[in-house]
Image 1: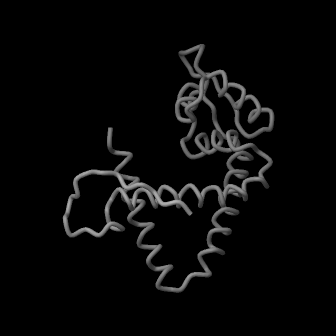
Image 2 (image 1 turned 180 degrees about the vertical axis):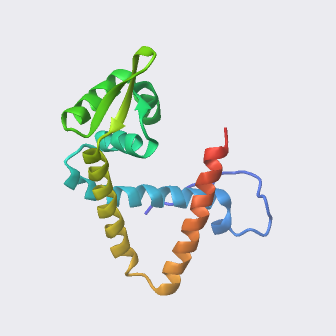
Length: 163
């Protein structure tokens, strides 16, 4: 396996070991997160939806009703692309479109109970798969990951507050 080049930058603490350097940790976490998500994404095949459709449905289910423009921005696609995704989700009975009072052009996209259920079932499959993998760890390793999960949650909450 090829090694990664280290980035030349000033060290925050001269007694910090390389594996404790924030940039090194960030690099390793980034790589691990990508591999973890790829592995768990295999469980999504059972939903019958493509990754872009599942991602859009996730934003709608967990973000609440949302405009088409906001959904396109959240998914980093152009509105015409999102229009096609939403049309297919609507045809499958996973979302509905509702007019916005006072704005004839605006439409809110809302998940149907069927859409929320499909997404919840997918999450359950992914969590069960990961739990099976974690069950193979020793108790101390699992405890360490539990603590790391708390720290990662804290880091992601801080990121949401940053402009």
